[in-house]
Length: 286
Ligand SMILES: NC(=O)C1=CN([C@@H]2O[C@H](COP(=O)(O)OP(=O)(O)OC[C@H]3O[C@@H](n4cnc5c(N)ncnc54)[C@H](OP(=O)(O)O)[C@@H]3O)[C@@H](O)[C@H]2O)C=CC1
Ligand SMILES: Nc1nc(=O)c2c([nH]1)NC[C@@H]1CN(c3ccc(C(=O)N[C@@H](CCC(=O)O)C(=O)O)cc3)C=[N+]21
Picture 1: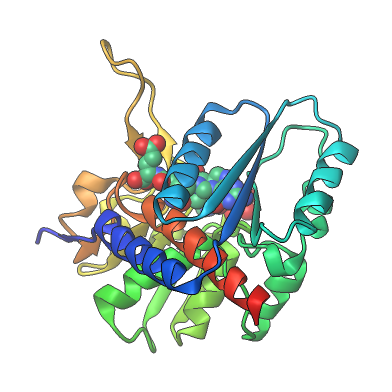
Picture 2 (picture 1 turned 135 degrees about the vertical axis):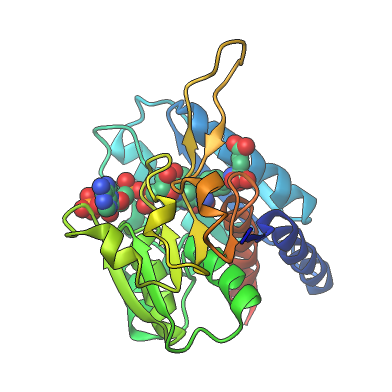
């Protein structure tokens, strides 16, 4: 079997086009503020594409680039200013923050109505309770791809590998909300290959290249690879290749469908960020 490639890049372009259309019809310009503290080169890339795609969708997009030496008080003051700025409907603080800054306190300072990442405890609680809330962009994008490919997820065995607040936990909540039977694996899970072989759906969010092996997969499983890992450059390459958390070339011979890296989940994250910002803008007008 050669797995169907789930084209997140194409799907995300469709989501962005619908967002742009709705934004245009709105008569108000959705505003997104991204806050980047420090010089992490990978973060610079993501922030650049968020800004480009927000503008392409007709949004007002501002990026605040702060030095790694920024104090907690300075960062909190910026967030207060953005909370009070009526032109800004969505605030995203790029994580992780440099050492010395208190991530929890920063997230708590964001107005939950502008929390387009869905990381504020109020929004995390709402998601857990099944109440309407901005949903974290990466898991939301993964669920869109799964539903598009599989239709109804009811009763399917889903395994989420990873339990971070950004990806693993909200992914598990969304799958549960879609009536899948959900298992969450992490670094203390015993016999992960055996747990994985039971799953109809595998979402890998670990942060280790080639971590999920082909012989861990049930034949016909649907695999969503969230990982973004940069390999060391091969001789003659300026920068290393991007790969996911799944041993892609081997896995595609066992899975029925799989997302590539790049071109899978990553573009969906950005598309969902724009959609969450549009929704926040709509809610602010209501
Ligand atoms: N495509 C996109 O848009 C996005 C991609 N990413 C990528 O997704 C990946 C995961 O990100 P994130 O969730 O933030 O990462 P974290 O490092 O916060 O979490 C990694 C998770 O993997 C688990 N883990 C680590 N080692 C093992 C192991 N040997 N067996 C089983 N589980 C293990 C950890 O378990 P434990 O809790 O026990 O330590 C942890 O829960 C990264 O590659 C990141 O770059 C992230 C966000 C968006
Ligand atoms: N507050 C916060 N919210 C986030 O959503 C957040 C964050 N912090 N910190 C870092 C992670 C990572 N992340 C990605 C987004 C898009 C791509 C993406 O578009 N990737 C492209 C490739 C990009 C490239 O070529 O470099 C792809 O997979 O096709 C990747 C990773 C969001 N994150």
